[in-house]
Length: 356
Picture (cartoon, rainbow, N blue to C red):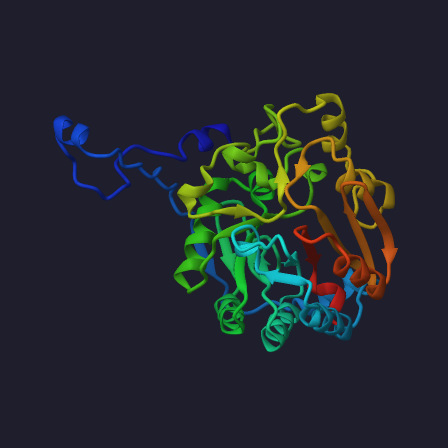
């Protein structure tokens, strides 16, 4: 693994600029040189689609709510004149001090059909939204030891989301690729960004899948500017995970949608304890979620409030000194709509909770 990572970035001029003499360079403003991209990994397309509905039904049967919950939520947000609702790519750049700034984030872990339905409904009522495709999900494909086998339906899924008008991003699971395959994990990340963009998706941001408790490193920590604290993280077989290897902007990425904020000083003992103990690490565990949202020992947050759907009309709200556990949609909406003007609120949804 470590040898593979050392070969990620090769030499050569990737800027596409003509080579100038030293005196010419001195006479001009310095032009930043883009880092070379890693090699694309090997990819095949499966000849037949997989049955993903059985997986979704079996894994989420006790958590599945109804689509009307999403419809009512979206309608209510759209009608509230105190809110400035933006896709995540604009949440920071087009924020307002006179309104509550809301970003609607949909992590597509499994149920991509419901995700497309959600995107269409957001477009119907004029609500900006952001949807993140997960390369390690069954609907996307399957990583083998030395290649990715993509679903034959994936291109149509991307087109459906593009037509709906939502923002499309990548649900980054690079630590999983690093710990379960022989692939270059950075090459795998670049391959999917390249492929999505080649199919018309203007991917400007990523969102890390899972939490730091799963791998000991958050998926967002693959980026150099997002490492929570300096350390070496290895998988169960002792292979080093790809922490701090990618220059985000060199990959054409401008934000990371978990909004984890690196702090200057970390209590390493507390952070390591949280990062390496997966027992109880669940969004449906009240104590773990309270720590994650309001007293996270690994990092701060770059949004004021987060709202998470965790099941059938079950919502959690946290940030700063606020923590509201397992409330109804009506109670959640009341908190969001009455938030302080200028605040930034991140609403995190998974389609599996709205598929009924």
